[in-house]
Amino acid sequence: MSKAPSPARLAAVDLLDQVTEQGRPLSENDRLEALAPADRAAAQRLASDVLRGLERADKILKPHLRKKPVPRVMNILRLGAVELCQGGAAHGVVSDCVEIAAAGKRTQGARGLVNAVLRKVAEEGPQAWAKLRIPRLPRWLRDPLVAAWGPQAVANMERVHFEGAPLDLTPKPGADLSPLEGELLPTGSVRLRQAGQVSALPGFAEGDWWVQDAAAALPAQLLGDVRGQKVLDMCAAPGGKTLQLAAAGAEVTALDLSEARLARVKENLARTGLSAQLVAGDAMEHQGLYDAILLDAPCSATGTIRRHPDLPHAHEGERITELIGLQGAMLDHALSLLKPGGRLVFATCSLIPDEGECHIDEALERHPDLKVIAPEFPWIEDRWRSDEGGLRLRPDYWAAKGGMDGFYMALLQRG
Image (tube, rainbow, N blue to C red; front, side, top):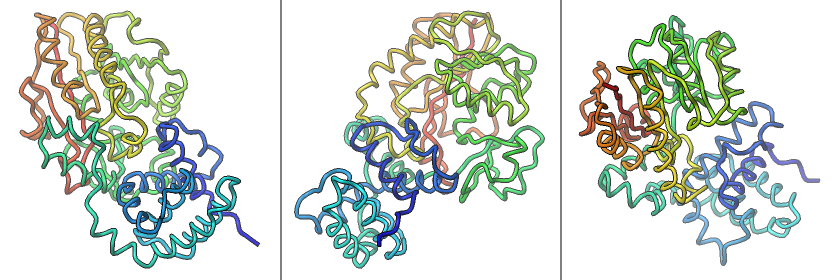
């Protein structure tokens, strides 16, 4: 009598199908909602590990396959191969993968194949895995990044992507995060190497911190002292920057197009005991005057691949040109909402200069009264500074600490 496979492994295969066959990122999946928190975290980790190591997994599997099987069987094999090559117990991994194949009408006939291939991988895979190159970004992204930053820098980024991302937390002012035993980064974030289930960590229920990559926590800091000021967080969700601004004493308006995403912001505000005015609407139609604005514009998110390894596999950059146009229009509109002398931070979590540095060069030509203020904080490293006065962060910076998301940010002021 067959046993049911691990819920986490079964869900991980479903997630892989969604990304590789439907081109949908992991963030657009509600498959995990029915799982227990521990299984949900395990499924996300497994799917992410496979996506990071997809190139290696396919090379490990190729000698054992006469022809490529149907996509779901291939994803079952990829899951098994990655787990086995990274030290997973052979019996449990192989047994579960066989049961996942047996559970589907279109994959039942592949049970023997899955069993035979993964048993060979269990014997030979771990040694072969370690000898393979670090997986590369797809050509649609790698080529422009090499043109922008050079082949060595891109290779360094790929190494950090493959290693994955630790968990970064932004502390609420005055909160004691010492029970977490994390590393205090120079920018004030706290980094955990092995986090596990986020909601079970000390201080979560008390609202002492929120999850936010160290690089993503910097744009709000560039605005400086915002106590008592009217501040617009123009694309607010998932809410980390709104929480930062509210914690700094600003009168925050958190604007986002998605009511569902704003609901998450509301939950985090309640958990942390902070307050902001939430507005669901189109940023391009929003009106008002603000002392300061934070525009973290919609972008390709190519800077977040170490944390979201599904992105290179879910799309091929087909929307980047459209996004670049939207970013420029949003920046112009944001400037129209800024009081004279007001400050605006423009940011994107992209590694592509057309989504960052180029926007500032072009905005300075369009707006004669606009100037870039070179930010001065003790945590800014010289190599982060870009020619036009902004900051360029890359995943390979802080590589020994676990890297950071790729980001561009610039502090602007109206005359």
